[in-house]
Image 1: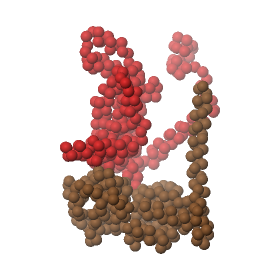
Image 2 (image 1 turned 120 degrees about the vertical axis):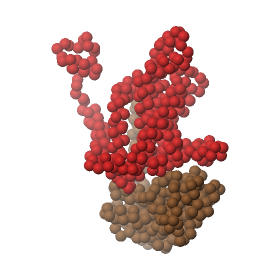
Image 3 (image 1 turned 180 degrees about the vertical axis):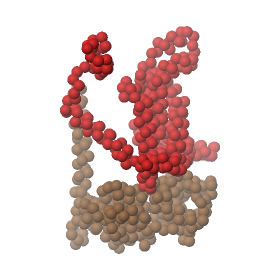
Image 4 (image 1 turned 120 degrees about the horizontal axis):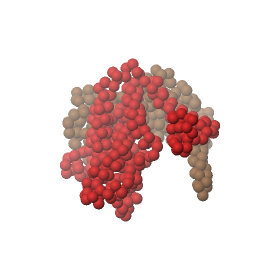
Length: 268
Length: 286
């Protein structure tokens, strides 16, 4: 009885391990999209690529990824969204990425200096907006309200692009804001606002747009606002250089730019 | 084998070794030796890496730097507070679980030890949903008393208590179960009230396991990351504990991250040395 149990347990463990190995290696051959005959006359790309992108690019890049896979059946795109500073640290520590899209040139320069890519291209720009819960419990109507001591504000960590850009906004508006928390990336700030745990968060205009009815946006006047530029590049050591270059080209193409503009990004 | 049957011609040390470890061949069979060696390498090499890459020359200035020392001080007092609360409310719960019988006891025991296996960040989300400003308990705290818990040091202590208290409860319950109840019965027949028995007989009886459980609870609270960062957020000096400081320092100041990691490593080693046989040998129920 006990030997049977041990045997079943070991078989189960081995099967689980094999299943885990199997699914990751079959990722590349997974998607053969239906519209094969209408694909463009480009040489057929295949395989899979991993795109490291800033958290604020989540919704826009998901759409671009779907369109790219439809245009190039045989290529599978996987995204990893996080703060650009965290992604830059991961890449310089050897994480396997094929494309890097950063929310600031500073984090991209980090990766360029470390020798992992060269010649990034700036593809969009983003500006900041204040996000408040739909009921606006603290009655935040302007940037100056964020400096009120009773208003709970969530910001990004200062080394993350959204945190650095928010700091520029506060400098422009000549106010000092004492946040209750410094979150690891802009989507974490947004979720704290959505949960109603904070009265306001400083995020990008694209994040307010993507959150829809879950938050209300309080615009920041143009003379206070600050922007950040988003560069993109394929990594030199990419395992699938053709597909990586094609993805970057797609983002820079009119199709990609129109998706990004619809999401609220500005032209660089 | 005992001291009476080990040959006298052996040295005293060898005799003692055989009494405690048993006789038999001293060499390890190869099919066990190689995997054991791999396990040792896997567990030890990361620690060696930490020690080798440490900025030994600048360690003291880094640790005295304001943001690092803030995180150190916050972590120390919050984990001590969490251990204190765990002792205050966890020991009575362990006593109830060990010494009484009531329907649903097994379910209750499973529920209170759930944080042992629950992923910590899940614990943080759960705390937020219960005690957050819109949480089903937190909303009344906010509307009746104007008290909000998230993003405060209180939230840090609560998160640490949530993940660390089950360690204490398990240790104490195990000790109570295996303690000699005859002594408690004897005290009762001599006229001691139940609380007197608890204070003067039971507690001293389980003191070693209680101490071991408290040390483990403290170490677990010190190292908590997922629940703290989710429920309490992160702000230097107020809610940024050592593990969170390490996480962010990796992006901005890797030397500070390594220095803080060394401190946590040292604390872990001290904890293990303190617990020694109790943790590795007879379990926590001695």
